[in-house]
Length: 189
Image (cartoon, rainbow, N blue to C red):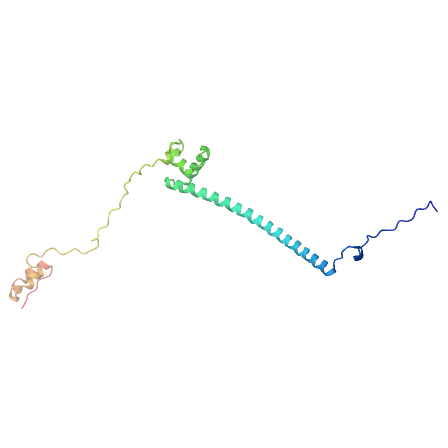
């Protein structure tokens, strides 16, 4: 029996007893610490979610900043073209293409100083005063068209002259007055 080895029994970890100098933690205190740890873990998870959300907003901010800078550069180019008198979209596109080929940094300065010397843009950027082409004017209509013409002068028998005559003068000159005024003379009795 000396050959036989004893069967090992699982060893239990000894729990310290208060008598041997170890300390024990009351269950309430242990449960409180566990709940505090879980609360802190939840706060860490929330903070991680907020950090991820903030990274998304930061990326969106970067995209929008890039977009607005691109738009500002495009409007600055368009403004410089308007100041140079370029209104044609084809000429604007040509000027932008030539600027890219030039290697310059500032579009407005390039357009003002170097573009007038560019062989391709020179003809489009010359600021010649446009020749004043006379516009054909339609003849003005006569304002008196359709108006009645005044009767020819009646000579010595105008209405004012006849009004100033006496009745006897009118009777004696009646046939002349009627003929001058375009009436058939009649005889008075």
